[in-house]
Length: 212
Ligand SMILES: [Zn+2]
Image 1 (cartoon, protein in one colour):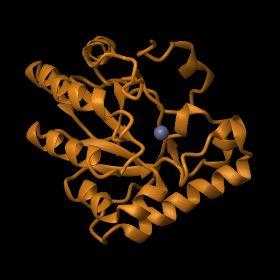
Image 2: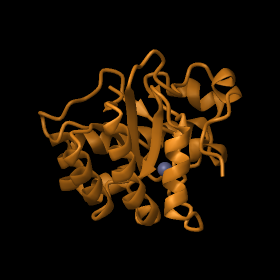
Image 3: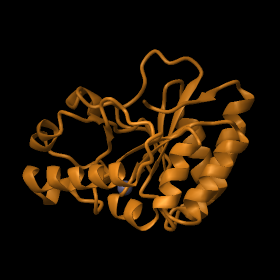
């Protein structure tokens, strides 16, 4: 199971963000596919216990269904970001439909946000499955497209939770953008690996920051 992004991908797509260069003892946790009652609340409580901040790539339809949890993410000092309205696969849709789905998510987030909700000057976007075409990248120039350096693979149910933790810790380095999922599918591995990863890197004096 591949946990570290292969070195050539950032070279092929240099306009996307894969890792925070020059970061010292800083890590960037990201959570995809929420907000979902249960997993998202677990993440918020766990992050608070370690005074860690993170970035949440939300599915627009989940924001519509769970606006209270969505608002709680921002209220606790985390950043909310765009992950399309329906978890759209970029390789199966054209740039026009894709952009429309991203905009729909952005509108839903704006609608549900409270005025105090911090909105990034250049909103953040992460393509579901990491699948995005060059035309879609061009269509989304208003967004800062965030990929990742470390994938926890927490959604793989066949992956033992101890292994999920070990591989994720091993792949992490200063400036890493780490992907977890606040989804039901990932719950078994994420709820095990997240607090232990926070514990491990907090003891080494790392800080956990938002991407915007
Ligand atoms: Zn996703």
